[in-house]
Amino acid sequence: MRRLLLPVSACAALLVATACGGEEGGQAASAEDTTLRYAAVGAPAATTHDPHGRVGNESDYLRFAMLYDVLTVTDENGAVQPRLAESWEPATADLDLWTVTLREDAAFSDGEAVTADDVLFSLNRIQGKGAENNGRLSVFDLESSSVVDEHTLELATRQPYAEVGVALASLTFVVPEGSDDITEPVVGSGPFVLEEHDDTTAVLTRNDDWWGEASDYRTLQISAMPDPGARADAVASGQADVAGSVAPTAAQQHDGSEEVQVVSRPGGVNYPLVMNTDTEPFDDPDVREAVKLALDREQLVDTVFLGYGEPGSDLLNPQEPFAPQAEPVERDLDRARELLESSGHGDGVSLTLHATNAYPGMEETATLAAEQLAEAGIEVEVEVGPPDTYWSEVWNVEPFYLNSLGGNGFVDFAQMALVADGPINETGWDDPEWEEELAEALATEDEARRHSMLGDVQQHVAEEGGYVVWGVGDGLDLTASGVTGLPTGPGFNRLFVERVEVAG
Image (cartoon, rainbow, N blue to C red):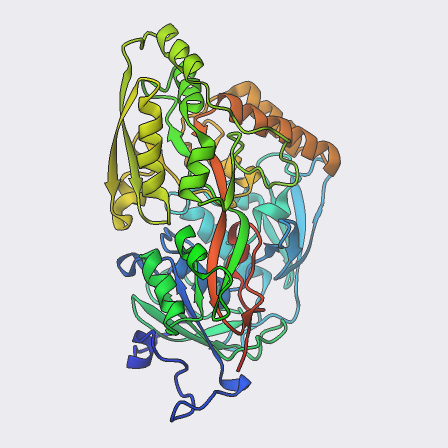
């Protein structure tokens, strides 16, 4: 196994360093020496080097996106684009076998060519860690997949599946074949290479042998910072160039500033209330509907997002190209009380809503939602858990909690969380007829018809399911003056920062 074992230096540990090895005396660095300092969401205690296992930090995902090539990516509009994979075409009329052709000019940073064997090994490793990564790639039948030649492989799917390009997007980090144990970093073939790291900060340098267009900046410094206020302050004080996922209050504070720019990612924030339909009282659809009707969605958007967003209609991803056009759910307290009465809860319901402050506004969402639900006779106690343990002890464990789903593609999410035996079916959604409709849509080659069918199945989940998507907010990042080109697309698009430009 090819490893890259690196020491930690004081330069890597200090966010205040403008550029390690830069000019002395505070002189402006040349473009060749420019550093992009990125303060990203992340708790140092949760740092990992394994891109295929459980990853709880956005700072780690950002590092992996720059170190390892992925097969495909989504663009600013959510459309799939080639990356390491040049093309993916159905090899059968049934859409259950796909030919994937790789770039021929990709190489790992140790000089070894990236081959189809490396790719298939990586996909198998990702699928083998499904219990840790939410069943990523579960749609593929990798035992029936094979390497055709050095730059071609055939991927089998477990069912007819027309959205293979989406399934291969963004998180299919490719490592060298034989990299079984990644407790320490291994070489990648991405636009940067790792120079130094500790649990808080990683320093990456530009990979001048990468097949893609060279980055504008030489060094990328990623710091894991769990507090959104601290991330915003780092940019405002000149200690960082980018602050990822800041609070709307920080965006308001710097709106119109010449020194700090606000970058919006439309629909990038989604904090749904998750109700487990297997658990009382959420096994009763009337109770679920009562919860949905009891919320004042406009007030939530105005309070939590400070207007940087839109009230929701319970669609999991209303920004999806095929999402149906639906009006926000209007509050109806009288109807909510009637539903509770008819379901045997005329005296009210007592619930515990779990939340965390991992992302800006999650705790505020829970507090305000509890106040609103109380007006319909749904008494809610809010329990706020620390970010370090929330995603392992609360998420997909408790029957009522807040999740963070900003920008997740509906198709991939449906395969993981909405089929009855999905690896993270957190709402206990079990509807065989709905699953048949989803499967039929995914087996439809004609894109327009497939998208129409996918819109219908998404609408069904919105009306009957256990997700309360009360609103979607803009993802909000801050950049220092002179930083341009920060990605603003959905989901993991924001991680691919190699095209960001930094004034020298």
